[in-house]
Length: 44
Image (cartoon, rainbow, N blue to C red):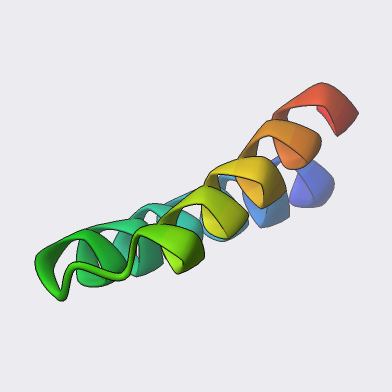
């Protein structure tokens, strides 16, 4: 299940980026990353 592992890795990376954006108060970037995460989950 390499494709599934790839999706999981992408989700973890996006979660890390979300935490970074939130910690630095970059709400626009946070919303953009959330949208990327939503699209990725729909693909799964």
